[in-house]
Image (cartoon, rainbow, N blue to C red; front, side, top):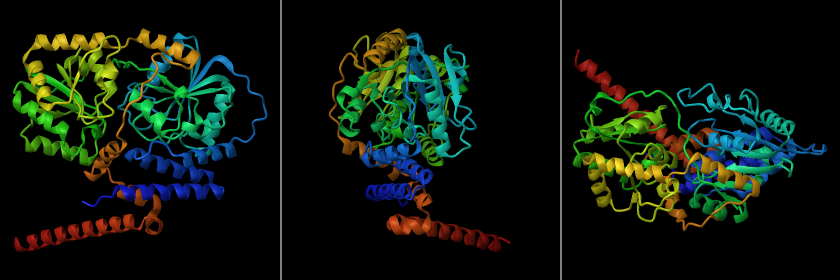
Length: 514
């Protein structure tokens, strides 16, 4: 299997960035923005950096070129706020902030550039937002070029005259260039959901809502934000009321352990998560694990299928795909098992609000462990383990003892931040631009994190070679990143030969069997 080295990935990123800069100086703003998007996607996949000053400056220049006419004096309306949301999903963070803003008597303009023609199985936040009072919804269509979409976003913000803008952005958000040209009387806040990854826009914001000290440390050390810009605000999960889709029949009379999240969070050099799953199932015949994830690539499915087959787990480890009824899944399971080496805050919180015990393992020295930070707001308890044997002992105790499961689940629930607490904290933050308590810094081994991200490429869960080649095309790829060109063409040649050999073998077999 031919993979790119991290050096080749970084070289590719720098080449894409160079093209973006060149296109800007040629006056091709649309093309420049397109290459900035591609660079951001590549950087977020591997996260050897968390921001890029050159691209921030380039975005600012593009912004000033598009929005040059600002002669009209801007007078904001104090109780008006714009939320720009790239996700528009109920299982992320926009709804929590909208409800808190409404509790503070704000009028809201909700803008999204989400493509609603795809991913219909995922719950759209619009289904809830449209029923809220004092919220106006604007959807930016995707059938126009980037510049026109930017101009439409800019016009809608200025027409509404907000005093604040809250941003729920992806790494290549269409909204980012707008930020640099907004009037200084508009306070710009990013909801830092993707705090563990690269994103652009750090020079276009005034404040960052951080839900844990890890993300705040990254923002301070790697994104160029100062400590006065960081506002600590943990969150609670939004609970969807989608009907229960049921569990497989084989779960009857079994202890059901539910697990899952983004698939990349289960991948590390030692296959830690998958070894623990295997040990738990082998040591506990009464247990069944249901595994849900949004990712459904061929490589992911192949990995899961092989894991099940190789361990004879056909009726013990069951892949469910994405579950829109996630809250009901937690209600009906017995235990939640978090992923490793990285876990998910929202999944852990959904377990806690449904009073389910949590099995969570972190590799020793993990800088982004978050289970306690996500759950322990009203009480402090120890939830996660860094000793595998102790985790397996806890798993057996939870599986064998129903009363113990109930007790541990109740402890989780009692620790959780409530909606009312979040709204109170948010009100203080939005009024003062400060938080209590003050954020503490983490000690982070960034090299270890980069290697963790790279391992996903090395294991073949993404195809960076194809991605880079598709950006450059054959001629430019050969010029800018020749080793990528060589690897792509060698792989294509090799695959063609394999297919050719297979064809000849099948043809000879047919002839011999006549």
